[in-house]
Image (cartoon, rainbow, N blue to C red):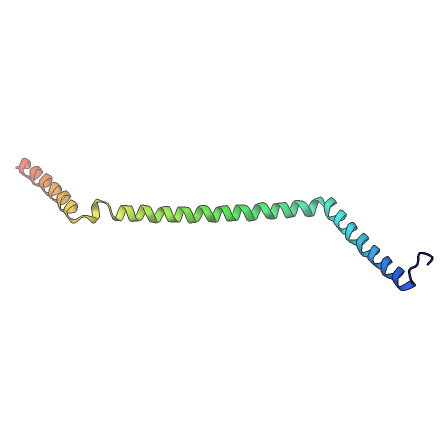
Length: 101
């Protein structure tokens, strides 16, 4: 106690040093724990892969919806196009029947 500290101050200093030493030891143990670090990295990669898969799924769903909309707005949605196609089919049937006679 010759450094001018009281017994209580020395005790607090010792406790502070112990706490810092414990934190340092925990940090070092975490760095050398290869198995835990590998698990953590695998978990991160899995999360990233899941997020990417969800993103791709959403994009595919959006594109499928766009393709469906485009197909619905195609020639089948136009009454005149359907009528023209039907006329061609009926004309083909009529020609075929006429030639069979």
